[in-house]
Image (cartoon, rainbow over all chains, first blue to last red):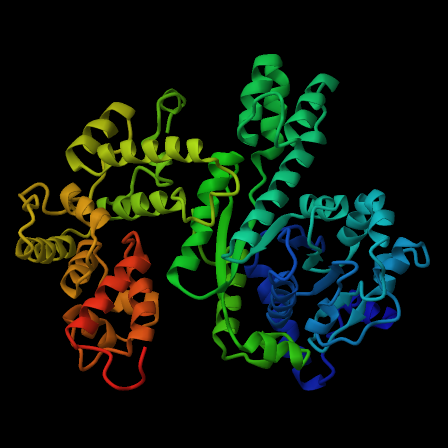
Length: 343
Length: 225
């Protein structure tokens, strides 16, 4: 674990085969040059959420991380789906002895001490497999500290696989990431929970703003869907606050101005399912006043369960499958190399 | 868009499009918006109640009434200060429009004929839109007319529905010898209707299959229903 970290820090290639070492190094340099413009040695943090269980968060996290590493980037995949962690299985890693819980309990000082290597050179993993759900409560107040430590790592990308629901820890990490990805199934239950998740993120952002106490109380009242202040949609809160305090209204607008989660529709079977992504973007614009980006979709594909049984990401186990092809395109879109499907 | 214009209603925003959009894309956006806020949509039921959805649908209808008509749209763009829309792919639209008009005339529907200045744009036909809305009996000919009206090629429809070209042709031509068993045919027709944004897809698929069963064109003796 520490050795793996030292290897990365010193720029030594992670590949066990020495013959590929130089090639991989070249790819790494070129991809960093051609990739997103960002500070050298400051990793870009992606969070993958969705509000509901079984919508493909771990599938997208594992395959996305694997593709990025295969393209020569240095990647860390963290499992914060505590209580239901299985990202390690998707990545083909046995449950490690140390995980995120050991960091949360203070057994180790730095997140790098619980990182393990995977079979994909350039891809590291922090597991949550041995950690109970209660660890999440311990970590809520240490979110900023963990993000700070992640920013210190000499990596290109950090991918955080979040759990279902709207636990404060899940919301904190989604909001703290540079980019948030929402995995949604084209089914009523999944779409409904995704809205609930976005709603919680939206109000958390507003609650964290530095506005007068009275405005915070208005926001708190609006969180209740049966609110007494007569809000039909969260987007209406700006007009309500505008009447009370125009300066505070501007602060609130700024707080969500850069909030553009990217959505991915998973288990797509037809054009109708694909169009659900655009419909969700439209509804979110009207309801929350937020512009979501429809980054792409992933087909319903038998290679998924076959890959899970073989405990490898589908992009590694079935590189020629429709799913692998979609994941490659999705990666291009997320990296800004291809346009979003919407807008 | 200037700050001044933001105070007026941006009809493009109502349809989730931008001022540079082509007439054909406006039609697609209109149908997509209607589907998004319809009763059967999975995307809107959880956050908007019936009254809100009704209000939104009225906004959508109003937006399409203006933007769906090239003349009204031109006036609106001028009033709002938007750049006047120009069709870049002139020749392909002329060709497609000619085909659309041909099919619709066969169906004895009145369609605005492509004149010199309008030939370059797709012309929404409210009458045909209405007929699509109120369609109670599905035929292969009608499916083909809608497909062409929506400017969707056989290739595109095959790709979107993952059905073969051969099967789509058989459905549109009501060629009983080539059609699948009714059990599968119902599903395929539902999918095609949904893809072509024809409402009541399931019920219409049943009318098609039931009619062909009554005519003895499908069913055969593969297995009884």
